[in-house]
Amino acid sequence: MTLLLTDEQRRRMAERLYEAKLTGRGIVPPSEEMEYTFDDAYIVRRLLVDLMLADGRTTKGHKIGFTSEAMQKMYGMTGPDFGQLLDDVFVPVGAPVPASTLADARVEAEIAFVLGESLRGPGVTVADVLAATTSVCAAIEVIDSRVGAMRAKAVDSIADNAGAGKVVLSDLRVGPHDLDLTTIPIEMRVDAEVQRGVSGDVMGNPAAAVAWLANKLHAIDGIGGWLEAGDIVMSGSAVRSVAVGAGSRLSASFGPLGAIDIDFT
Image (tube, rainbow, N blue to C red; front, side, top):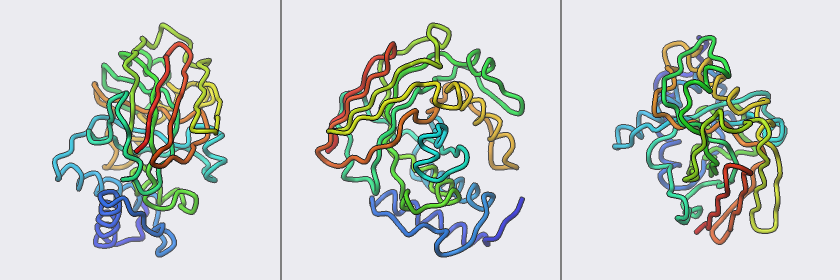
């Protein structure tokens, strides 16, 4: 493990990120103020999540970001990152999403996995993910970068819990073996802007992203863990993210997984 920050610097960074989340006001990307490593960033992410848990939140799953070429090119990333999903990020389908309370709201269209069994790396495969998955569903993630997404480096995104903001899940659940997870057409309309993709744009198969996460969690010394039964895992966006604000309207279709409509306030 390679660390450049002191315990106190990591603690203060986590506190600043948590304040930014609570207030909806972003901060300067920490990498513009100090140099720090991926190992530092993963510890900061853990400390940030610990602050949320101490305030009464509960864990519900994980999100994976930058799993498609479209998203990696958009943000200059070379591989995926991940964050933890807590209970306060979930918004019921059909309810408005309060974009005005977020620092930098952008939307993504994804396939979510609901796990019925735990997944522990190393060596987790797509077949393992499918066997452990109870159902999949259409999902919209509202990412909320507190660190200036278009300026942030990969370490900033990791420390910021991968910009976890809000999540809307479709009520339609389908077994993972009842459809081809690589060919689901996805169209996301936000006001006048349209983004299109296919589920296979996510690492060839969105289940591969879930396998990546299970193995990545194992690889992070002492601060990773595993995917639990009952976890909801957002596999990453097949389309480029689109900015939203109060008054925006989203309509997304996911072929056999149905559609999601959202009004932003």
